[in-house]
Amino acid sequence: MPDKERLQAQDQSLEVQSGVDAAKEDLGEGGSVRSPLDSAIAMSSKLFAWAIFLAFIVSVYEVISRYVFDSPTYWAHETTTFLIAAVFLIGGPIALARDKHIRVRIIYDAVSASTRRWLDVLNSLIAMLFFAGLGHAGWTLMWKATHTPTGAIHFEGTGTAWNPPTPALLKIIIFVCVCLMFVQSFLHLIEALRRKTPETSASQGGR
Figure 1 (cartoon, rainbow, N blue to C red):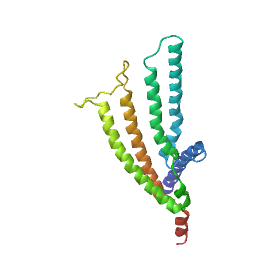
Figure 2 (figure 1 turned 90 degrees about the vertical axis):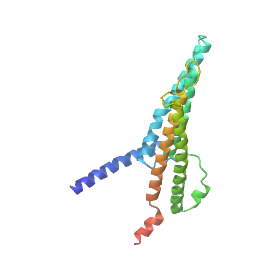
Figure 3 (figure 1 turned 30 degrees about the vertical axis):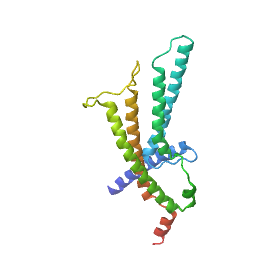
Figure 4 (figure 1 turned 180 degrees about the horizontal axis):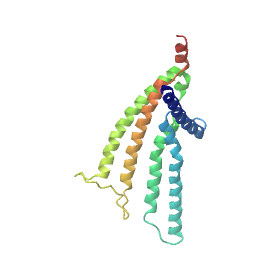
């Protein structure tokens, strides 16, 4: 029985690793996936990319309606604004999952693998602290945008003739994305602490 359980655990580990490897191949040069959550988020980017295409379609429809049929819509501008803003916000977790955030690597590339590991640990801790503060602010914004002062649920609108609840929806997305990035940073911290470097491998091999 222990052997069977061990084989099942190895199979599950291989499935997770194959998903991570597939995401790495999809990222191209410079990408790096460090957890199954990163893999899932990175692969979901193809789905969210369709929001940009939808915003393009809505914009084309608005132009044709306005300048060809002289019948402008009252919803196109706010729809495209919401879609592009949502994609922009979701880009945070996706960029973190793909390890594609802009960074200055002068010091990072000049030090040893062991030092880079501890820099990654420090970076993850700072990121978690930042996202924790941002999450607190995001929760406050989200609550005020989805509730009245008396506590009743009421989504904040744009105040226009159409008045869609897109401001409240965007603030919900902000909070969800910040929470995701906090969890991602925590998983990156665990990965950095467990990472094997040539120095640690050599010291363990010499024992």
